Length: 140
Image (cartoon, rainbow, N blue to C red):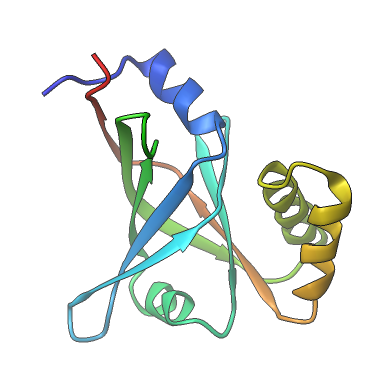
């Protein structure tokens, strides 16, 4: 299986791809959710709403898997495994939430509209320091 080098993985994770988060339900079944993320200094950051199944799952069992897919026509994938660290609404959560939202919108006005439309929900910062990373590169 073709894999990416560490510098290629870093560059890939800095692009605004979509990610799928895997958490464990109470009965052991997987729970998958699409999310936006931010990757900096070896840490993956995700913001989730406090009223979601993934938040309840992570409170009970902090093991997490995140698959970031390049999508068509970029046939690369990076999957990270680790333990989620949860942090409730603080100025840091607000700041990282804005940075995540902003990187997925073409302009600040659209990003601000989305951020404002969801600001009344309590948010939680999920920080993951990957314990294992698997990459695939089928572009060649």
